[in-house]
Image (cartoon, rainbow, N blue to C red; front, top):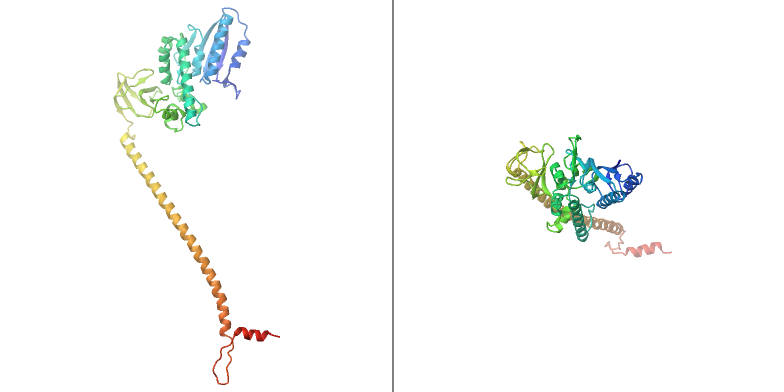
Amino acid sequence: MKHEIKIYGDIVPFKWMNDGTEYDLKDLRDSLDSIVFQPSDELVVNIHTYGGDTTTAFAIRNLLKRTKSEKNISIRTRVDGYCASSGVIILLAGDKDKRTGSKFLKPFVHNAWSWMVTGDKNDAKKIYEELEIVDNEIAECYAEDTSITKEEALQFMSEDRDLTIDECLQYGFYSELENVQTVQNSMIFNSIISRNKENRQIKIQNNMTQEDNSILNKIKELFNGKGPSKNAMLYTDKNEEVVFAELNEGEKPKVGDKATINGKNASGTVNMADGSTYKFESGKVTEIKEKEGGIDSVTLNSINEKLEGLITENKSLRSTVEAQNSTIDGLKEKLNKVTDLEATFNSLKSIVGEYGAGVENEPQATPNNGQPVKTNRFENFKLKNSK
């Protein structure tokens, strides 16, 4: 007898939204508890997930394998839609001869990553070490449940890409293909990480060249390039990924660089999404034609140099203006002091002026001989006011 369950949504340790977009270990336990198994029954696990929490994915894998052993049943894992990241761990919980896929649905593998974006160098080092441990655990799982080695698994993961259908069948990620075609929206990129970036706000792939705060870049700088690396990548006009494994992310490809498309050596003339045209031969770039009317690298460098010059000039002008403003503030302070002194002087002058006017108008005593005689104003005041 065949029983079916669905693992749809992001793999999470515990649900927060509870809106049907998340799947946790309790969901699986509830589904299994609702089924009455008989020996030789088949459990079909339908998968549609972007991935998520690695620990939960391993727990789901273990619970499925435990159920298989305890109930003496077979387990078929079947990809209904996306099967990415931690979802691949769940895919491999199926029996090696019961993993069903489609030629239009490709598992996506990549190195483990962390949400941590803050912290000092010790925190960054700890995260780096933990990511390395998880990468090795995932690679060991791949090696255990497929025919690839741990080293090959680590290589696939470091390339951040969809596995090709040939690779899936050759190595055992798929044991068979369904004759079912799933049409994808033409506006969606081929990379599962690009498809999910708006939901998870992941700063990787092409976005990482636009965001300076990527934790992986910080870790990489901390270890002088020894941390997880990203390859340079372009997209064709058909949304296929062109990977330049020998170039770091952000480096511009040039003639002679090696490239792969869908895991195979690039060949022939390829039109890129940015309007440029690349020619490949035996996996190497032989010619690059930039988009007509586009900005070539020489012009772009010239523009960047001019911008840097303008930025430097602007900083110098701002420093000059700030110095001038400081001088003006000092002059204003001195002017205010002069104004205060002038007001004080005018006040004193007014007082002295009134006193002087009183002396000039004081009647002078004249003796009989007609000569003026000096008098004491205060004495006269005293005489006039004495009783």
